[in-house]
Image (cartoon, rainbow over all chains, first blue to last red; front, side, top):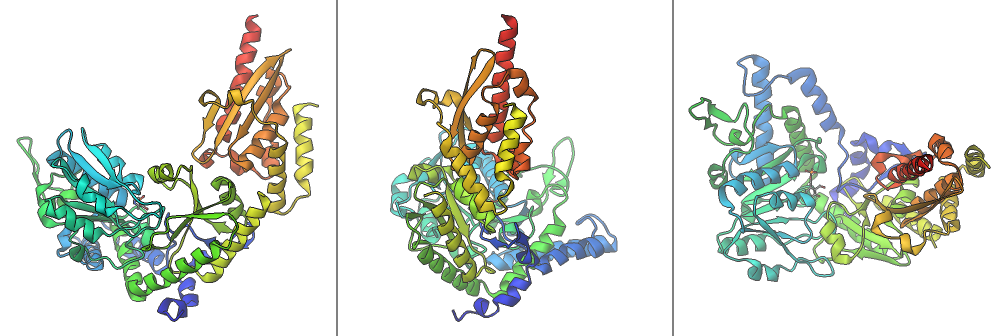
Length: 407
Length: 142
Ligand SMILES: Cc1ncc(COP(=O)(O)O)c(C=O)c1O
């Protein structure tokens, strides 16, 4: 592999102290990156430095520290803007993560634009957090765009699924369970030709592919910091200015108001209208640090390296007798979901864990995907920029070992 | 054998297994020795659904003793189900309610009995105790 990441893999791994840990006396093989990624030292140190040197509430004080903190927080917003190439900084709303970002849109858009009987289209492969918030809109009907056996979305059905009642399309750019990369640019084009806005769930795409929300022409885009080497509890929503201006606030509180009076309250300008309460300004700056780390390594380099890992893992796993992969779309990213023979995923995952291999088992918060295949769950290995082919070899050896146990 | 003696016997079987894989081989083996649940009870009424796996359990009361049957759809949980049944089945409600089931911890499998594991085992133990409690009350009424 001649790739920047491959050539520097030892240094990169050294950036992530946790990778040196042992579990049950064995070196940790961490292949649960779709759930959450490990953090480079610079991110952890940034958090500490913030608390040691720059901690003060933002947007509130005239004093020195408050101004330093406010500037850092707003710089972080600028870093997020640059990272996903949004047009304006105020189109970036900090949230707790993807889930809160989607709930924000579902709540505000739902109140302003959705009448009982109106329809929201999602895909059959969505994470629950891109299904349930839409179902919570009173009277809304949430309908799925189906996928084919290999996990490819049946985009050609989108036209027929759109009706005069369709108010929004919400779609993951990358499926957390199948790894499918969905053609969101095409979906957005089709939806826009009917005047329908699109929310893209970027939780699994941002860490693995270059995202340009303007090129996509996405109306809303959500992602989580913790899945891209940043801290937990921080994420972002991008919304086109024209949409964010139209929508009512999500939560009420401090920071989001212009003037409060019992006769009526006026709201702050973007982005603050959607950021009630003290924001996670420690998290935002640490997230920005993570994004800079990724930029430094190069998103394209990461994508190419992870693609090699995925191809290798797929080839090697297929040498296991009776192993079935769920999701083999031609366009795929860093996730392999599989089962071996009749072995229950709980059994497989439990033994893999004892062999030092951390994978996820279960329905991966995507029960409709499990229903599609008539299974209860899968074992999922998911890769990050610090994983290696040697770790994949360990996974495959471990899976073969487990398969022998349950013969 | 008392519950404590049965527990001690299981602990002694596991004692010399230092490798985790050997321990799990034995658990799987335990599951395979379990005759399972009568198919008529393998219904939602007797189902304990964990997020990760399922367990079915049923109990009868004969001559002052509780007899359990049960199984799981996974082999590891199934092995644990089998051991729990071995230990508690055929005992009086009072003994069952007093049992602390320390053997699970002693053989290093406490993690499977953690509520965060959501595999149905915690609920199963609760259900087994509940059966014992109900049988006890019923026999007191007689
Ligand atoms: C595709 C997708 N959407 C949404 C989420 C929810 O992300 P979070 O829990 O960080 O809000 C996840 C995380 O598992 C995901 O993989």
